[in-house]
Length: 307
Image 1 (cartoon, rainbow, N blue to C red):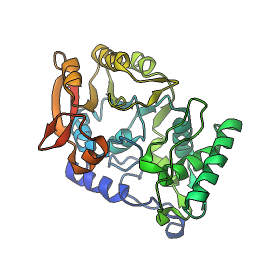
Image 2 (cartoon, helix red, strand yellow):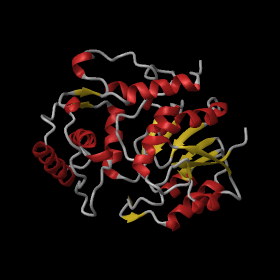
Image 3 (cartoon, rainbow, N blue to C red):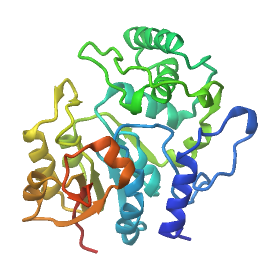
């Protein structure tokens, strides 16, 4: 039975606001909502990732629900995985070209526990950074690299997870967070993930491989964020490429981005567009880059969906 949208969102908010599955409290796999085999209930990503889309999950679930029995769901620029974890399709895929992130997601699918990495002090944080950089240089697909990735994500500033061109982690410490000074068990998340393919490809290659029975979701980096895509940036040309591959896709497709005038102009001729208030929390993170209603930037949802 499908979980109502408001109930699904309640699950996401309840889980996302807390550290997931402390080992001390769960000796066996917990019966968390959305983690039982066959359930379509939403669940939260364990990452506090920059720009994560948990707050858009109710809209995604509503748009995908008519296709749940007939289509797979593909999180083409997957980031934290909140989109696919929130939709929780029977079949689908997660893709992101970021190699450290994709290594973490692959180990999450296999079943991942996080050891106690000690006090969350500035000194210990940078010791973990050095340990992580060594792991990425010597064995970037290792379990240890995945565990350290999660630890730095929870202890670094705003979940930015920035790496320089040499592949070294360079996000600063995010301040004291004593709730992460213990071991965690993320293995329950592997249950629903067994249904999904994990990839680390260029988004254009992924989109070219999808048929009309694939529901595609693309969430490119915001146009005002100067992050990297692969070893380059994500400039205007790649934003247009996102639009082009979404337009060429033969099945249902959804794209989200800031509702800037430029983004709206890019999609308005060929897509149905909805703008959604991002709220006070998003306003603090985003600044004054999107269109605003009452001082709050908005998100653009561009879709081509025919039931």
